[in-house]
Length: 170
Image 1 (spheres, rainbow, N blue to C red):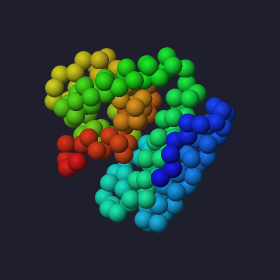
Image 2: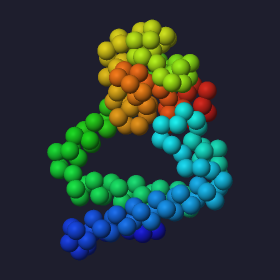
Image 3: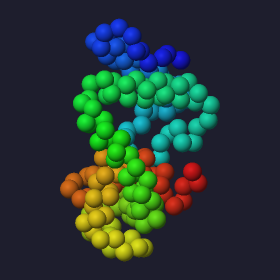
Image 4: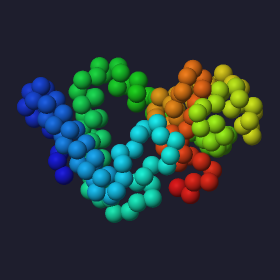
């Protein structure tokens, strides 16, 4: 496995990271093809193809390299305040995910694959949720890739939110 560079000038490090990102992306794409899958779309309402596959070790390795290189690239180029803000927001994910799962938001969204307004979601949810607060929670989770915002305050499932369905054994 290739290691993340910490030598040379910052410009050389960035170019090396970009090369690693490109190489690991190409490897991941090839591994999807080798497994007989098409490359998944991040906003797809379908289950992720690798959820039901086994023996995707090379795909997993390429994703680990891709994640590390992308993270290091952002750490290199982003202002420290941006990084700090991102790290401070991470603890907010768990309670927001808890609200989404306990309120069955992904299950509710399966009723409307093209999206549902947050006011309607709040009405259907088994637990009372104030629409404005729910809007903040789902917007935050959508910014983290868990849901797809179709239009303002209208949300739909994607392959990541499908893992939060009450019927999902994961």
